[in-house]
Every structure is written in structure tokens, then in C-alpha cells.
Image (tube, rainbow, N blue to C red):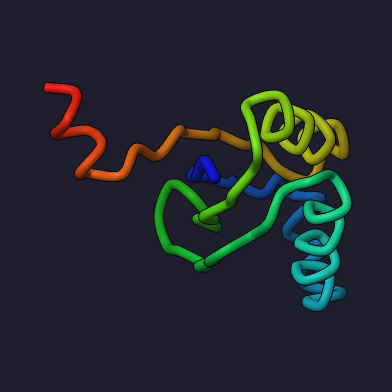
Length: 93
């Protein structure tokens, strides 16, 4: 299944939401699953991005739907990258 890296930067509203309800992070992961994708790994990070997520989705349309749905809430900004397994990448060269 295709893998995507989703980089998340929380807005001030998003920071407040997480501060008031840390369990919201796992709730969002379940909502991602309802949209047809799976969060395979997740880290809170320091620096430009607040979270790094590894997500599997069957296709670009599904990950686009996830990104649009999350972005429409106004609690975060998202950058999604397609992850190419290194052996596949080497095979393309």
C-alpha cells in the first residue's frame, strides 16, 4: 500500500485543543481510519513541525481527502509527501 509522510503544524487553536484534550490526537487517528487511511507511526517533534505521521492509504485520492478534511478544521496545517521505498527508488534510476 502506498505510504505518505504527513507533516503537521498546529495552529493556536490546535495547540489549545491538544492542551485541553491530549486524547484528541488518538481520536483524529481513528478519524483518519474512517476516511480510508491508516496511521502507521506518529511522532511529536520539536522545530518547524509539531507532528510527523507515517500514513498508508490506497491511493492519492484517499490521502488528499484526509489532508483536506483535517485542514478544513483550522487546527493545523498539513504538508503531505509521497514516500518511495528506497529499493523502488533505486530501481527507477
